[in-house]
Image (tube, rainbow, N blue to C red; front, side, top):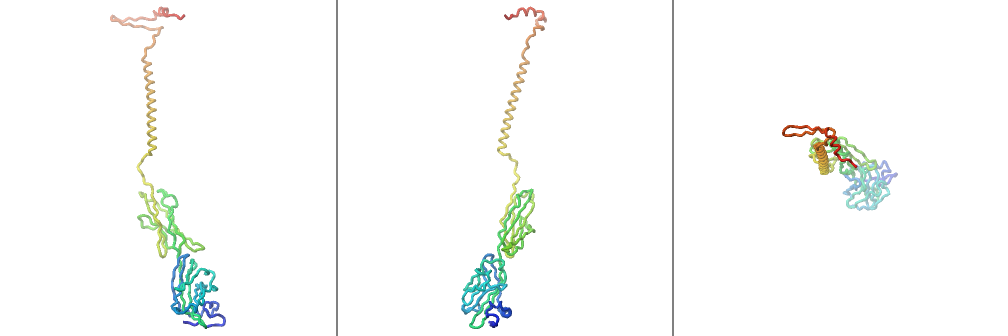
Length: 332
């Protein structure tokens, strides 16, 4: 135990010693040898627990103690003064964000942000009627983490054999900065993704990361599975498998509609051809019939030949033409 002596320009409490520079140096040198160090980790937007073990104040009532926490910038988070919470000295950035657990002597810091990372000190002082005794100091190093979202794969464009594989993978709102992000393709151990892009939100200080993949589609392969992995300091997160399927070549098969149309065309063609052939046939037959009929005898000239068993006799019809003409009936 160390007794802090009074001075004319400042109060007896360590919490007030920051207003008295020479006393602060004196107290710091005393407390340093009795400081216990711890490490704690909290999730972004969750609650952090800053311990303050009371091993040297177990049998002392809180009404006799001053318990408070301050950050690495000497800003007070919480103060429990002689049995009562005292917000007067609490910095505005911590007002309404803390609660004290009397059973575990731990301070709960709510809605933890990335900017809350750093060192915190808890002091336990005994306040006797005269003077002030520092019973214990506990230093806690707080780290903050935020889980990245599950990586998501999206196509940059329609995937064809000619265009190849063009994908992007992204993950958001994580901390600290990731170590690596890459693609894995089916039946390959190669990691694709040396172009990791990282951005940080100016308000939350969280990171977002993305990578892209451009790869040709292997000949003879029609199905492929791609996964995306994000490696952080503590874990590796994987995306859902992204399946790529190209249509396989099929044997040539006509559409039933095309087949029906072809049959109709053939039937129509045959019908038309048959009609044309029939028409041509009858036309030619008529022409043959006309050629085969006997021609009318010309009255002006002609020779009638008559055969007999004895010989042949030729009769010249021109000689009988006047008689034939006179024998024809005259029109009345």
